[in-house]
Amino acid sequence: MKQNLLDLFQRRHACHLFQADKALAPEDLDFILEAGRLSPSSFGLEQWKFLVLTQSADKQALQQACFDQPQVGSASAVVVILARIADMDPDSPHLRRLMAREYPDPAALEGALKNYRDFHAATDVAAWSSAQCHIAAANMMTAAAGIGLDSCAIGGFLPDRVCALLNIDPARELPALILPLGFCAHEGGEKQRLALDEIAEYR
Ligand SMILES: Cc1cc2nc3c(=O)[nH]c(=O)nc-3n(C[C@H](O)[C@H](O)[C@H](O)COP(=O)(O)O)c2cc1C
Image (tube, rainbow, N blue to C red; front, top):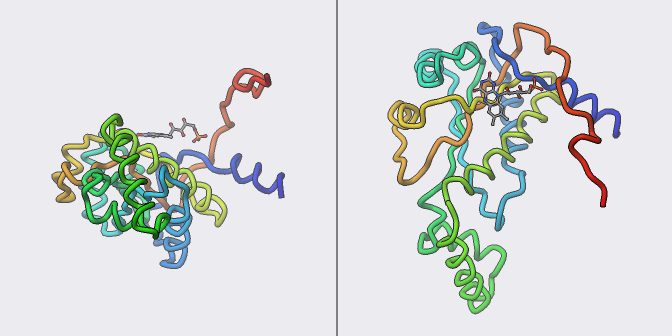
């Protein structure tokens, strides 16, 4: 099991060009999205939304908003991970609904909402929400690798252009990360990572 997981982490690599003519099986796409859905998140608030593009014209247009990176247009599917902003407002019905899952008792819910209100006021909500989306993205990339598919996290995009293209209201949601998926057209290179003793310290 340990070795299988390590092999998976070794196998996953950033794919810079996909085989554009290949489609993803719908059940494989669902499997990857499910890995994102089951991800952990701060307060359990699932700050993400997954916008899935499979049409060639949509992917090509999105590539233009991503500094013309060819892995976007050539991917079989592109998941645009949106960070929820307005839904994280302490007064939003969505927020209340999600908090009530953990605090079904009305008095406990009000207490939790009061604490959350303080947290929210002191937090950069876009950065916080986006951080949760990155956790979901990591799980989706690992899941993709687990079924022999490739991916590339794309942080290189122009948020304003992505919002305009996809008709996203930036007051409600912001693109956190773009995740092209498919069949890579090249091999992954050797993993470049610092040694464990350079990054981990036991105290
Ligand atoms: C948040 C984030 C943003 C990234 N943005 C891009 C990007 O815009 N374009 C790109 O080609 N790779 C991008 N990458 C991929 C990294 O360059 C890559 O993961 C890193 O170089 C390590 O290589 P590996 O994934 O093949 O192990 C991004 C990765 C992360 C985690």
